[in-house]
View 1: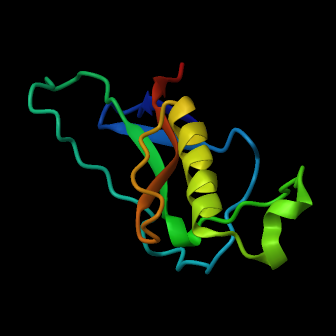
View 2 (view 1 turned 180 degrees about the vertical axis):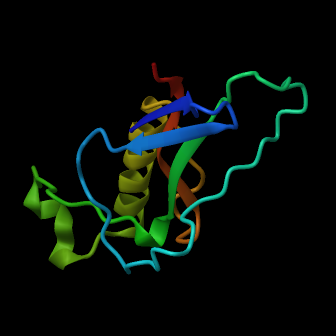
Length: 128
């Protein structure tokens, strides 16, 4: 994900551009185009007027909404009729958690289907 900001020509504020780095699209329900998709709130108390903004964007989902595709099974005997035993499910959850952590993203308890998973985060850069 790439996030850039630039000052408006009239100096009255900033405009942000957020682009996917993979050019992928999100699947799901469409939204009303007249409704804002996000709101920005400045929580930095020490920011002085005129300082460029520091925007961080995170893409999150619940574990139950996470879909993993293109799985390659090395050993088909582990599938035990299509269902994983609890121990094997824990091993898979820990592997996914390790991969998420290796990308520098926080990861909670994946055994909780309602756990929040952060899929990506990025910080804005100034665009000239």
